[in-house]
Length: 298
Image (cartoon, rainbow, N blue to C red; front, side, top):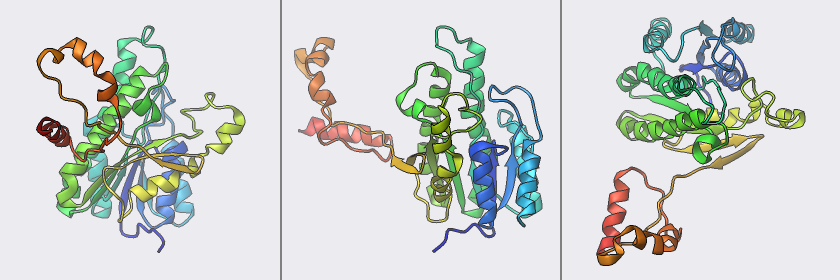
């Protein structure tokens, strides 16, 4: 069966270009009414443009319904106003794709605290603000699909992106927690870690790779994760048409007692502690304590 979004209202932040534009266009093609949010800034967060209006024009030219929103995700009141406009016009908000982002790359030694704070504010707080603005509406509807945008930098690290990596891993924790809190109201919350040739990554990819990693090759994963039959709590890697599941795992570990319960004991037992045999993928933070209990029981 084709995945459709008829009757659904979707908000896509950072939808004036790149991945967000691709998501917005395809959601509209598949029946959604779409709020195209974009401040229109450069990749460092400076300046403005009419990028959102251009995407709305594309959607309308193809027979879809959309409206532009120029609110900043870093301002909660602007996100609340965006959601209120969508609800007033179309009666609800069913899908939120948190895609807006900025880059201010430098080594940590050279990074100004203001650049660290700004990147975290846009990515992590911005996604939290946009989600919070939608959350009560989704609870009342007993339906919601939320997608966070993480990154391989957050999951695995990357030289020169301490601010970006910190924000992106924070989004994984946010998504995991909201997946638990939203479950009783059928609000499913997932995370995508895309690798794509966009305005954000222009100049970071060689030309051929830039083309191979086109945004339309990430889009299918994102749209599945906001569909009616989506999973929840998933982390999906996506790039160049390849889709991967990422997991945060936990080893059984080793109980240390007596004289071994010391820094030296941890050092001596490190190989056993780090042994991945029997590792699990916890469904919530409580499972760490549960696994400790099992190890103590022998």
